[in-house]
Length: 115
Length: 112
Image (cartoon, rainbow over all chains, first blue to last red):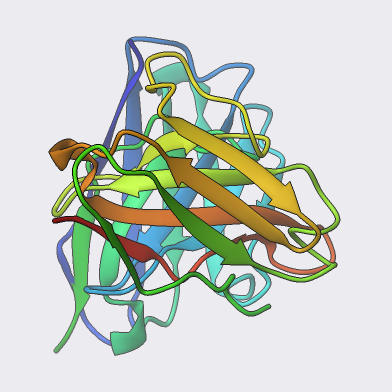
C-alpha cells in the first residue's frame, strides 16, 4: 500500500527557511492531492496546504505569505518550504495524501525552531 | 478561522458507547458534508476513521460511526475497547475563501 515518509532538517534557526520533502512509495503521486499538516507539541492539528499532481496549490491563508508547496512527479515527491520561521513554527510536520480527507499519513517529523 | 470545538475529554468503560461532539459554524460544519474524524495514538500519526460525515474507510471497525445535526458533528464509538483510548480530532472543509480546512481542538478518550 501507499506509504509516505517525511525528510529534512530537525532544527532550523529563527528567521530562516524550513524545507521538508515527502517521498511517496508503493503508488504513484499522479492523480491525487497531497497535503502538509502540522501539530505543535502537545497541541492540535493545523492544515498547511495541498498540491495536486499537476502543480496546482491551495494554502491556509494564515500561512500563505510564507508557504510554498511543490511536486516532483518524476521522483514521486512533494515538498514544503516555510520562510521566516519563528518558535511558533516548532511542530511535528506530517505529509498526507488527499484534500477533503487525509489518508494515509507519513510518520511525521519534528522540526524545532531555535538558535 | 477558529478551531472546531470538541470536549477535552470523554471516558467510558469497556463495552460502553460514547459520543464525541464537534461544534463549528454555518460556514464550515453546517455548510458542507465534508467532516472527517481522525484517531491519534500517542507518538503516532493520525488515522482516518470517518470521511464525508458518515463513511468508514476500508478496515475501520463498524463500531465507529459519524453523524451531523446543524453545525455539530458527532463521532460515536460503540462497544468501547482498550485500543480505542486515543486522541480524536474532527476536521471540516471551511470553503475556499477562508482556511479551507479547520481541525477540532481534540478529545482525549479514556477507557476506564
